[in-house]
Length: 144
Image (cartoon, helix red, strand yellow):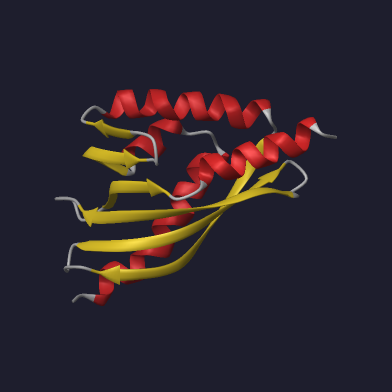
């Protein structure tokens, strides 16, 4: 197994977090392989067109802007190289408001693969608990 792919994972997620903070949905989509799969408990979405994935991210950006969530940090909890070109990663995402106060955290599992240009791309994204964490946070907000 190559260590070089493991050494690139943190930089990849730092780039993803910066894309989020700039609401750069085009870059967010670019960081995904085509085709890619997004998996939630109740849905599976497969994308073969980056512009459609970008559209999904645009919807998400609207939510984040509406709720003043503008900072993100990805903490890589573990990673395992499956091959020289493929790695499984567990990430805890932390989201913050404009004052950098924590809003919510959530966990994801990813499968990343090097593309033909030697760039890491997300092939599979599995949301473990984001919807539940967002719902809990929204409930707290409505009780204030």
